[in-house]
Length: 102
Image (cartoon, rainbow, N blue to C red; front, side):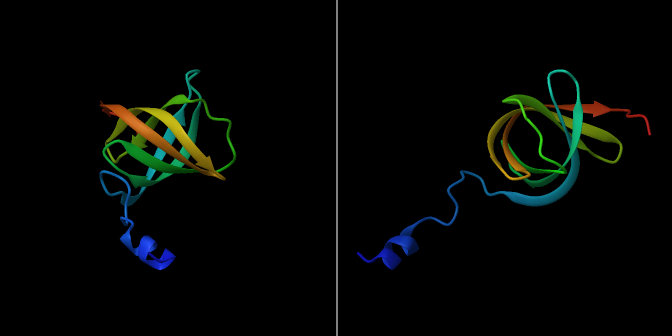
């Protein structure tokens, strides 16, 4: 088998679910309560790729808050990887925050 055949036999996506490209506002919140704004670029049922404005020292466990028009969705998150200003998160424990002050 040639290298080309091997490459062509590989699956296109290794994830169990495909990523959904999006552009949402969010915040990464550390255990101390400090929130840093991020852009959520990709979202799956159990993961997210976020882009930070500046390089941050991120803890392994944190909270991801997605800002919606009249509410927010909050996830517990675990840092899986970092590349430059992008980070991959495993998300779980979804809960909704309603009646946000404007």
